[in-house]
Amino acid sequence: MIKFERFVLDNGLRVIVHEDHSTPMAVVNVMYDVGSKDENPEKTGFAHLFEHLMFGGSINIPDFETPLQIAGGENNAYTSNDLTNYYIQLPADNLETALWLESDRMLSLAFDKKSLEVQKKVVCEEFKEHYINKPYGDVWFKLREMVFKQHPYRWMTIGKELSHIEDAKLEDVKAFFKKHYSPINAILVVAGNVKAAEVMLQVEKYFGDIPSGTKYVRNIPPEPEQQEARVLEVRADVPLDALYKVWKMPSRRDNGYYIADLVTEILGGGASSRLYQKLVKEQRLFSNIDCYHFGSVEEGMFTIEGKLVKGVDMKDAEAAVNSILEELTEKGITENELAKVKNKTEAVLAFEDMNILTRANNIAFYELLGDAGLFNREKDKYFAVTAEDISSFCRNIFREKNSNTLYYYSNNKN
Image 1 (cartoon, rainbow, N blue to C red):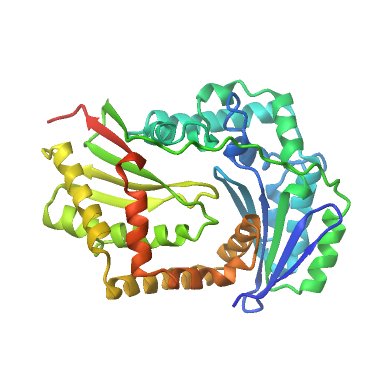
Image 2 (cartoon, one colour):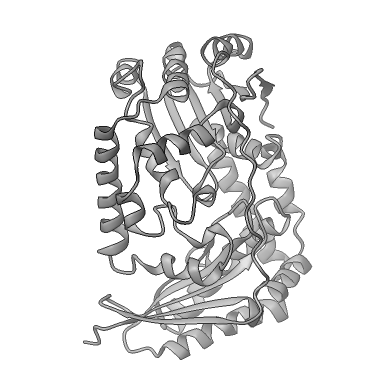
């Protein structure tokens, strides 16, 4: 049981303090309720661009890194379709430095054309390196557009097109900041060797005077129910043929998420999983195969992807995958196998909880979902899943009409 205290500043900033006196460190985690799903379809990639811009300095602190390094701290950030997260870890005695830095860039991020051009160049190079020039780099651009026709999950966090970042204007960036980067749209978690009463005073000191901003209200178009199987073939200069199969799955808030998470473990969780045992080790159809999902806040994607062994026919490989899915759907899972994956999941959760940085991030994420207390009920939700839940999930998700298949063929047949 992880204990924490929660309070809300007058400007709407949600604050959670988790005391852990077993460590000399403290973590300051700021999660903004904005991801790529909140972008204009004609101006995508802005949430990720801001992940970079937020390190460009504020009006009062032009160099974000130096004072943090002097305080013995380190920091980083990440962006997803659903959120943007910034985190700092440093000795607990220097906590105020982190609060000062985070509050100042929330209040007065510096905007100038030079900084924008530098960060645009960085993001554009990342786009080219990882998604244009890298083998299989365009896979998820194609899959997302196949799976989602209306929902903004249909584009990548990096952006739908390189030109959207190249053409970003200073006024566009300022408007995005004003719309999303304010206390009313943020969650602050302070964790580690701290005292809640002292943290509350410090947070009030550094964040209390920041204007609230306007609460962002989403108006995301609902994704129509998929009515037919979708298939796409691609040929490219990649080393091996690859098969990708994607099905829509329940959102992160739905109990079906926990079932999906266990099913990915049954099918693709390491060398003892069904897909690996049958298709890599025994039948030798795939050189490697994975099963995973994205844990999206809204309706997500359950995915199987594998690189075929050279010479294996794509249809034979797909038929073998479908056979394993049918077996799981029709015959279900034994209580022993279910207990095994639950225990493995429990171990993963326990391992994550050992890391104060991960703990702070998870608390912020559960608060974003609507209740930080979910952190302490997560294990129970996994252990409540039954064998019948697994079978029911498979019957519902692995329907042909819910499937999206990408055949990615290699031009290199030597």
